[in-house]
Length: 480
Ligand SMILES: Cc1cc2nc3c(=O)[nH]c(=O)nc-3n(C[C@H](O)[C@H](O)[C@H](O)COP(=O)(O)OP(=O)(O)OC[C@H]3O[C@@H](n4cnc5c(N)ncnc54)[C@H](O)[C@@H]3O)c2cc1C
Image (cartoon, rainbow, N blue to C red; front, side, top):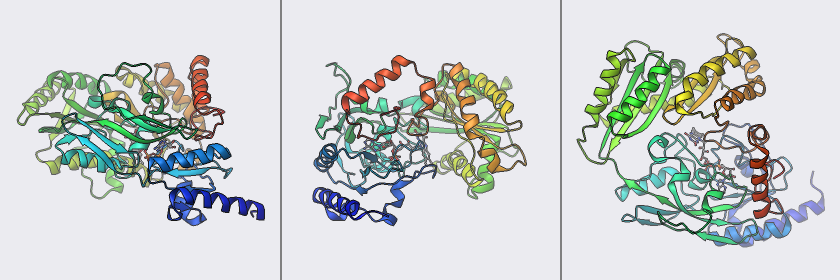
C-alpha cells in the first residue's frame, strides 16, 4: 500500500507528465497499465509509475529532460512484440514507460531517392503499405509486422524473412532522429547513401534496445517493387541437401533469392494440428521442406525456369524429393501461411524451449547435429523444432519435449538447456542471439561469450551517453 507521501509524489509526477503529453495520454490506473507491463510471451512482468504516450519529438525530449532531472528510469516501448523482455520495466516500479504508439506519421516519402522518413511508432505493415502505394518496396518482413513498430525494429535490429537479399534493419536505415538520455535531440535524419564524415552514429542506436536513447524517427531505404515472384515449397533429403540447394538456387537465379526458410516435419505437424487453415501440399509427408522465394524487378524474368532447373538438377541427384510451385498469389500466401503457422502451432501446443542462434550458413547442419547430441545429454529424447531462416544461418533452434513427456517438467529444463545450446553455437563462432537482441533475458549470459574488451567498450559507451543510467536500465549491459 502506498504511503500518503508516495501518493502525492506520484500525483505530482502524473501532473508534470500530463503537462507535457496531455492528461489523456498518461496511463496511470493499474488495469490500464497492465498490457504495457508484460511482454508478448508473458515471461516478464514489471511495474511502473505511469505510461506516457508522447505525440511528438518535442514531447519525448521534454519527458526525458524531466526524467533526467529527477533520475527517473525510462523504458521505451514500441509494439511490445519483443522476445527478450527489453520493453518490460523492472519490478521495482520506479520507471516510466514511454510508448511511441502515437508517433505514427510518415513524414516524407521520396520515390526518386528511394527513401521514406517515418516516425518511430509507425507499424511495420503500414510502412510496407505506404511504400507499395508509391510503387516502392520496404523489404523488412516478419511475423509480428501487424503490431511491431519501426522504432522497435530499429532498436532490436530486426531480421525476418528477407535478410538473405536485403539485410536486417542495420542495412535498411540511412538516418535517425534520437532523443538522448539528457533530453537533447540528435537530428541525424540524413537520406544519403554516401556520408563518410566520421563515426556512423546511427549504428550505435540500432540494436541498442533503448539503452542509449529513444529513437523518434528514421530515414529508411526503399527498393523497386518486384514485378516477378516465384514461391516454391521443396521437400529435400536432409540438411546437407538443403544447403547444397541453397547454393544452386543462388547461382541459378543470379542471386535473386529473397527467402530460404527451413520447415521440418514436426513444424508442419504442429501447424496442421492447431491451425485449421493450413494445408500440407504434398501427398506424402516429407521430413524436411524449404520455402524458397525469389523475385525480380521485371515481369516474366525467367526466374521460374531458373528455379525449376535448379530443383530438377537437385531432383536427379536425390537432393530434392518433391516440389510445389505457387501458381497464383493465393497459393503463395498459402505456402507462407504454413511457414508462419509454425510459430502459433508451437504456442498452442503449450510452448517449447526457444534458442535464436546464428552460425555461418555452411555450419548449420553440423551445428544442429552437435547441439542435439549435447541436448540429449541433458534431456534424452528431446525433439528439435529447428526452423526458419536457413538462408542467412539463423535457425530458430527450438526444442519440443520427448514424445509423451510432461510439458511443464520439460519447460523447467530451459535454464539448463540454453547454456548448452549457446555453447555449441559459440563453438561454431556463432551468436546466441541472431535477431531478437539481449533485453533482460540474455543480458547476463552474453558476458560469457563476449571478450572483456568488447564488454568494456559497451559499458564505456553506455556510461558516456547515459551517465545516470536512466535509459532502459537493466537491459543489454550488466550494471547498465
Ligand atoms: C509472432 C512473432 C514473430 C516474430 N518474428 C520475428 C522475426 O522474424 N525477426 C525478428 O527479428 N523478430 C521477430 N519477432 C520479434 C519482434 O517482433 C521484433 O523484435 C520487433 O523488432 C520488436 O518491435 P516492437 O515494436 O514490438 O518493439 P518492443 O517489443 O516494444 O521493444 C523492443 C526493444 O526495443 C526498445 N524500443 C522500442 N521502441 C523504441 C524506440 N522508439 N526507441 C528506443 N528503443 C525502443 C524497447 O525498449 C525494447 O528494448 C517476432 C515476434 C513475434 C511476436
